[in-house]
Image (cartoon, rainbow, N blue to C red):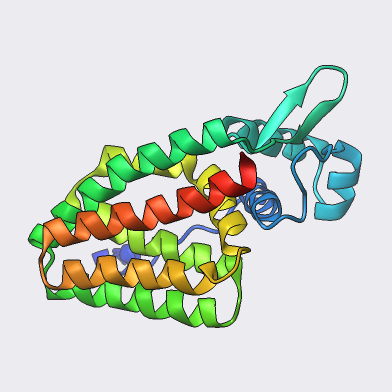
Length: 226
């Protein structure tokens, strides 16, 4: 008896399970961003194997990937450590964000339709919900989802690749600034202003709100790091 197309379609794996390396990478990245491992901490392979329950080969792959993301650095005779944050690097990251994100939100505002606005609204609601719970990593997830929708809608795919490569360091800076007075409230509030400008299809206001949001975060980071 022949096999029909419906039977074959049922075989397709829509969401393949994450590999062990991918899971370990995500756990380590979030641990560094969340401050479980602090700047300058040594990352000892044997301890990490025990803590994550994976092999040394997996840990070595994870460390190489985190080094490429700028979250880990290799020191002679010491091995891998959690990379230190300094203001000069942070300043450049904020400048890149301001250039890429303000352009993306402006273009998104020009073309955003009802479906995009509804998805952005969901991201904003989740962002405000998590900020009320004082949950920095969940705030990061909601913020990343908001900007992903913005960049995809605006068609700035290469820019999103650049932002994604910097995302580990961007997230560390976000957690650092969120720990300061009132930023858990003011940050989401400023992102809502960006959304409201997109919702009214006002590209100039969207870009201005985006730049103001990043400038406020940069000022806090400079105070802490410089």
